[in-house]
Image (cartoon, rainbow, N blue to C red; front, side):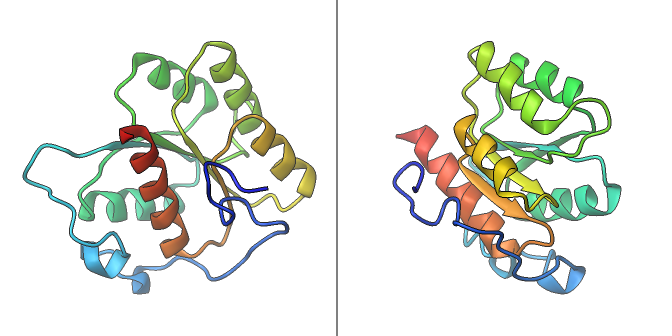
Length: 165
């Protein structure tokens, strides 16, 4: 059931832990759970955030940048496909409910074009069929909104580490 050697990657059922808020500590890397990431070495993996809800994307971007990640935002599926085809993205955080095309379609098109950037799905969808389809299309993690920040952190670390090995 687990992906990439992690039984926690995609739990059997919807997992709603806690909402995200400024109280989760977006002011420091340790508070976010990333630990000490070397921000001076230039070794900053870039995370592409594909999210059309500005409240959520602003929070995620602020947290990623405070934690030493490079972070970029696109708000549509078509923009995500274009940006991922350009390269230099370590991992993508993908919402499924996008305004132009469904996030699952984004995954399908990227797979057809040979793009293998790890995907962390962050979505409000709790239907097991969506989870199963995302898994079949290669999602490494599937987190439901609201999500625990530390779960996202762990997922990103796992994806970045897997690309380095």
